[in-house]
Each structure stands twice: as C-alpha cells, then as structure tokens.
View 1 (tube, one colour):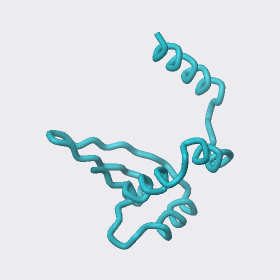
View 2 (cartoon, rainbow, N blue to C red):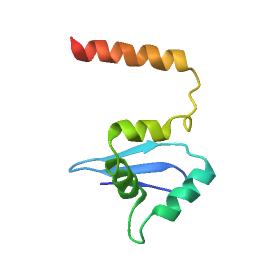
View 3 (cartoon, one colour):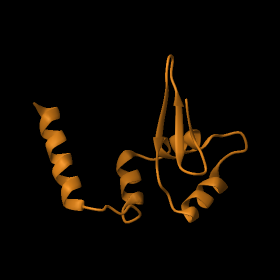
View 4 (cartoon, one colour):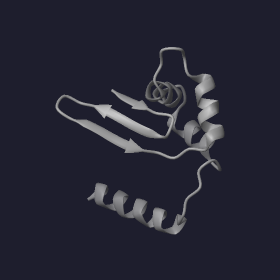
Length: 88
C-alpha cells in the first residue's frame, strides 16, 4: 500500500520494508487531483483508480503534453536500450 503526500512524497509499505519515492507535480495539478479524491481515499488509491479507468493507450494520449522532460533524447535512448534488453 502506498500513499502520496502533499509535498509529493510517496510512502509504500511492504511485508518487511517501507519504500518511499518522490514525485514532483505542479500545485495546480495537486489541487485538481485533490478535487477528484474521495473522502477516505489516499492519493495512491486515487491515481490507481484513474489509471485503471482508462486503457493504457488512452491514458498515454491524455498525458501527452502535460509532462516535460529535461532531455528528451536521453530519455528516448534509455527507453530504446531497456526495450532491447527486455527483448534479449
């Protein structure tokens, strides 16, 4: 189970360990997500619900243009490498 906190900190609990990851989102995005969140729902549960409510293809299309990459070429090279490694 994971929770996303207002500062973008994500805490996950497992059987023997706690995993934490940090994400950065704009305040306006946080406010928008907060409006969609149900009363007793964590941000992780909200994001899980939103992701599962669409096909992966539609989700990627809906995110297009809303994510900025520092170095798009490095990202694409890394993705190509990982796909090659996965295929071999």
